[in-house]
Image 1: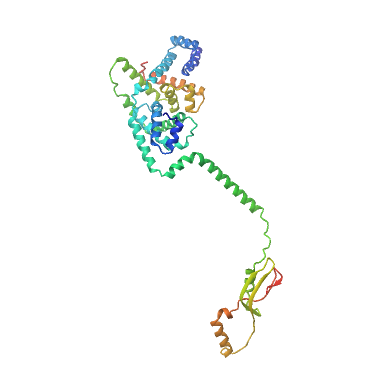
Image 2: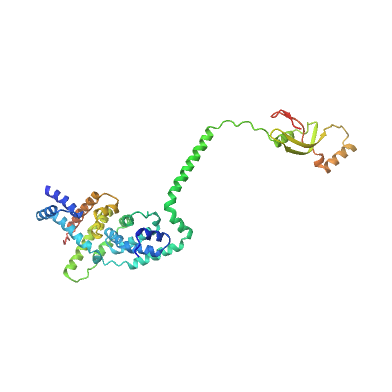
Length: 183
Length: 213
């Protein structure tokens, strides 16, 4: 039997760990994509993801069952990603650079090219503000419509289009500066 | 430049996923001549292409992370008492309205108290109770010509009470200190303090303007 989000939330509020696990399984990819759009590397993304779901569990009582759980969890993820980004600024590290040096698994030529392009894209997303990278992640990684992205970010459709367009411009600029454009 | 602005509008339609044929054609035509816009368009396409293959690109396996989250959540749940769980259940529905109601009640009570203090008029003179009257009557025992003891009071109605008491006339006797009379009276007084003690006197009571006895 398929439970909707509201039912699972109520069950989880009643103490059902199984219900909460279903919620996690349902939205972990969404959270991962948003967090990845912001952090650009796996380990930090997993940290953010774990923090998000622990926070979701603590704040589950604040969620209105008639609301959109997907948007709610997306907003929590955005906030958590912003916090992560701030903490990274405080503790500047070279982890990202090191992560980028990891060799791609060599298989077919196009897969290698895709991998390089992907890493370049992820790297260029790091120059964006968290809200911008979130909008890009939701639109391109999660395949959300502009309206859905607007719902998750709590802004208008026009704003989202503008944000994504500006994000593309900034990313292109970053990729051009790095002289590694492989598009 | 003008074409680039037009391209930007069309690219935003592409980003929204709702370009019409004409817009798409305009974008493609413009990209043939403008490198910057072409790179922007290519970036949009690449993001769309690779982004849709996110799972393949990132090989996301979250089983271990999920298990860890659930482990922590379960541990957190065990630490919570049943009452805390019930509280958590009702918190979103009751806490804010309750807090607002409490605040309103406090404001109302404060306002009420302030208005009462401001409007307070002198309280009407309270009629002394029977006990007060008797206490007052006990004040100056030494100068009273009478003493009374063994008093019982019974209130009949708002206007009258019944008093039952023993009355003794106070007398003044001049005697040598070691006379038999002085010795006998003092000895009797010491042995029977309640029987002989001066416990009151008659006096005129101004508040009621009548004599209590």
